[in-house]
Image (cartoon, rainbow, N blue to C red):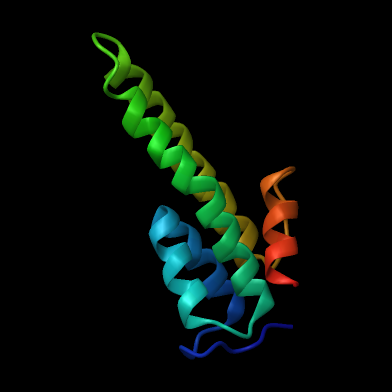
Length: 110
């Protein structure tokens, strides 16, 4: 059963959208949806996964000679992760990534 959110979409669609913009949409949906715990969990998990990953890709890209190649591979891996997380959230599954997911769940359910 899906519930409506404040923006009028089903919660599984909004949860999936929270991954599409890396950590930026995670922050946006944390601010927009103060009540829906399913959307807030996926938004928080998106923020906690993709913000450090984005910083890592940025820093690795500055390594001389090979950094940009490594950063490209990390970026492609991040896009693959986004695709997986969007599919999982759209199906309405509450998948906790081992360390980050448990922390996000604790933050949302306090």
